[in-house]
Length: 167
Image 1: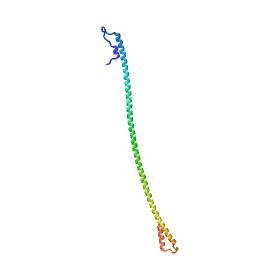
Image 2: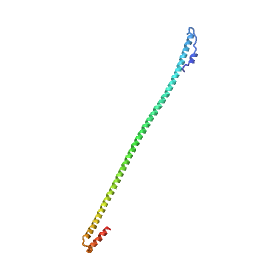
Image 3: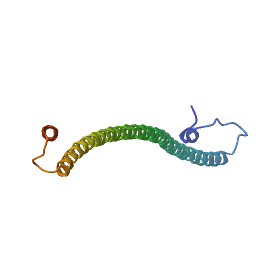
Image 4: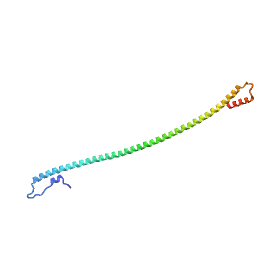
């Protein structure tokens, strides 16, 4: 166990003949006590400073660890957001492509339908023109005939035939 200032103060030396001057020894011991007390105080102050610095170091180490973890979490979150954005973009592209395909297919189907309707209308127009031509020809034949009285029975049957076609 280390000496304390009190141990030094209470230390007594045996006396001998031709020994040291007692006042000088006491004065020296007083000086040693003061210096020793000063060193003990300084040592305690330094220990307190070391503890404070150690606490600050621990605090900053904790901050460093927290910041490091935060950076890692932020990086992971950024990567996740980036990946989600890529996935969402791919889904949007796929959906757009499907919609484009659907629109194209609908347009092609409508185009085919319109083409079929046009063809049907052409056929109907052709049939109508043929019937109309037949009617006009029959009427021209009637007009070119000499008179109404001379209508032959075969023309009568032809007019009936044209009327049936119209009707």
